Image (tube, rainbow, N blue to C red; front, side, top):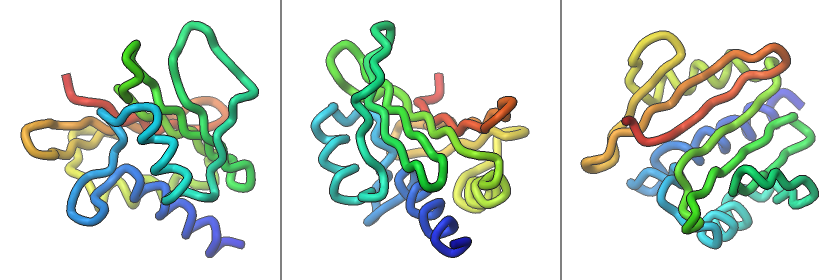
Length: 139
């Protein structure tokens, strides 16, 4: 079971990193592109349309086995502006190690990476019952 968890974490981490030579961080993709990529490349995650928050435009994917949720926040024109992954604390050491290995540290629990002329910020925030990893364009 532990090897399955590690595999899924690596798969999720690669969703935020370089794949086939270009970053697949989802930022800038439209709603349909995200749905297509998730259905083809991240089959362990299922789109959850049962819950709707009228204050946000987003797609919510869940992997109930590992208690991982991914939210894709979308603009009014349905373009992804931010990705947030929420995970159980049992995964924090593996996720932190992957972030340290793949990105440039920019302080405690903060990393940066560049894709062309764009710079992206990755931030890990420790909540009470879970932790989040957020990716967005650096301001």
